Length: 275
Image (cartoon, rainbow, N blue to C red; front, side):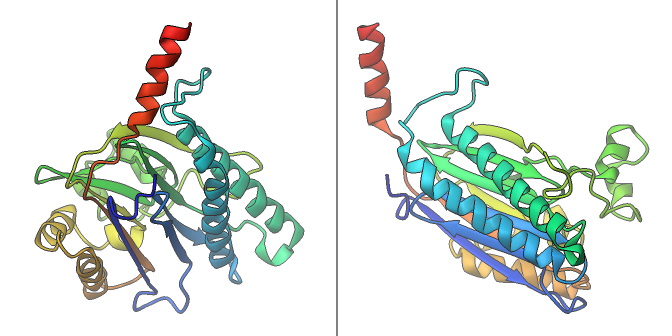
């Protein structure tokens, strides 16, 4: 199913006002409902290379494999949809490529990246992430963070050393505990859920969330929900007005129409009677 007229997707990335180069990367395929964001790290262009390599690899892998999935197909071992398994495999492939590239080039040793991937299908989504780039959902006038940071700060919050409010002023804010490309093997966290019409999903790097409060993010998306390009521009402007100390990437996805794969459920029913 072509999702281009079912979901509106918009993405912008900005260097900020302090950094000289942009190590973030974004990409999407509107027809297949694929959205990817990565925030790179590493010296001598390493972060830039890692993030772009990761986004390109994940999108290419999903473009190759998602169209072959039978709607409603589930992996027997994990219970996840096959779309989730495809995302997981794509992230693993990107990790192997980034790690191998860094091992073969001493200038890029230790380069890595965060990643957030959203795949929409059958009135649902699969979400994979590694690191502290985030995904939020705006539903029924409420903004909810649906990823959990892989960061030292989040671990300290979980252990009760910080409240979320105290954490905003912590010096440990940008220390990630999991990243793509650093180790030979890394697994993303996977989530699945249904989507509802008028949901808005935000993928962003920490250049936004370190400098713009969730309440301001919510108010901006609410104000410009009908114009996602303007919403993205306003969010980046707010981050730059608050210091712009990091690269800022924003991707917004609005669910405009139903995109259920009814044929998938029909095939399932037929299969039940054939058993």
